[in-house]
Image 1 (tube, rainbow, N blue to C red):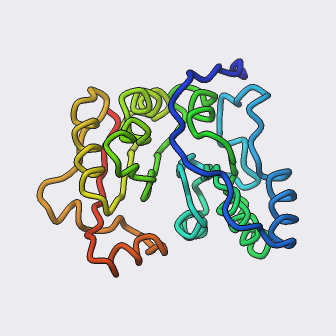
Image 2: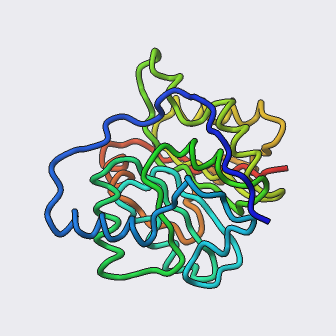
Length: 233
């Protein structure tokens, strides 16, 4: 039985600008066609079983929030054909790049959403998601902007609601203050257990990891990435 659409709670804006340089005509066409075919419409009720949303038969459904240009999402989806992936990216240029790449090399286990991730999280059924990735999110470096960081008590509540028991929330960043911020917030939340025995655990990339341009830039600038994993209890 389908669930009624949920009304999103108001939040701070967790992302910055929506557009960068003008996108090229072929990207604009790919974006329009890609969202028409793969985009998620929150105006209809979410299916009770998210696996039915995909063209491919999938056994699990995972989210990537803020996928940038989509390098990691395409890589992990191509190498995990049995899993379905919902990619969320409100930045038009990033979504256009993703849509163009999927036009050239389609993947039947990907769906897309191009608005605020919190709206999608509030639309999803409870305990319907097998994993959430938040990789190199905007760190909002200025202290006065820290309230706009995506990791927050209200968003961890959202994660806890949609994640299945035993599912993982993975967070990667090269910004020490955001890593510490995330550790503090997740360890204070009763629904999440940090999975790490020693420093090597959070400095070792995830299995099957592919380096994005953001991470390559961080390493060139001598910033050390951290890879945190939390399990939904």
